[in-house]
Image 1 (tube, each protein chain N blue to C red):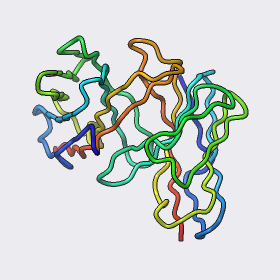
Image 2: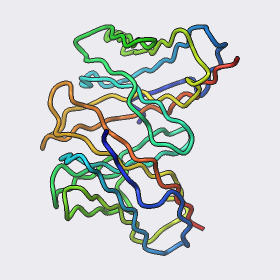
Image 3: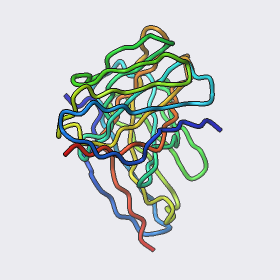
Length: 115
Length: 115
């Protein structure tokens, strides 16, 4: 039962253009959403997040949009740069007892930026 | 910067061996996590710990156990390694969960091959 889904395993975008990565979720109890970026042979690094009470959050070239009614979020990268080539994971957070956050991750989308 | 260190980058073990994966964090974080990453499945939570000697099962705990004897160290144990446990193992740590504080910090991962 995949509660967080990234239906595109890969995406190829030309340098300078916009990259849009999509993520769908099924559990309406998720209260926070995050995007992580992962290079080969490295651990995931945090990129940007959004609370369920917002519909947009922007940080430089990165913007995350949340559509709660559709249970959909997207990450926009503009302009795309070669260093953005990586695997991107969408994650959703459920509050837990004992003060531990539980992140549920999607399958990942491999983004390739072509010069 | 938060540093999460996993003791091995690559491990090769034989079926039936007992395997220990070690993780240390240097930021005095209360919460620690073990995930595994597999192609097409994303990151899946194995176990987490919210305090010394405390542990909770994640989504796929079967075949694994954990130990947290000190706050900074969280160990994953494969009691009897099997080939289906060949995977990338990722350790993460985080502050105690409060609103807006969902971020996990990941180590670089241990690629385990079970032959």
